[in-house]
Length: 112
Image: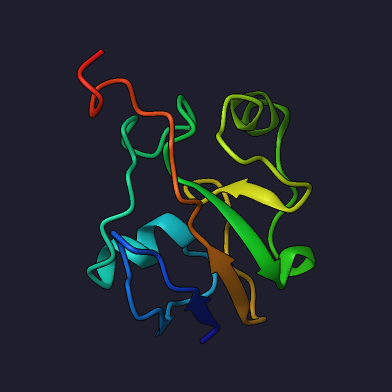
């Protein structure tokens, strides 16, 4: 089972942590199942960018992003070349290291 190392994030995972999840699981599902309450305003249907993560290691082991995901990523705060929507990034057999960006664009949470 692959390991996901989550780098420290002040709100979601202050100490950072490592979790394991079966291959075929999205990073978002794995985080939520392990008590890391990453935002996912669209309920993981690739209709927002709130679950944006930056894959620091293991990017190539994930499934390739589809055009819909790439379009949604354009709306994410702090976009980098190795950014993914965690709801669309499916684990394979290799370990990954992810960083949850400091901010996300979530109009519902911001009361806009």
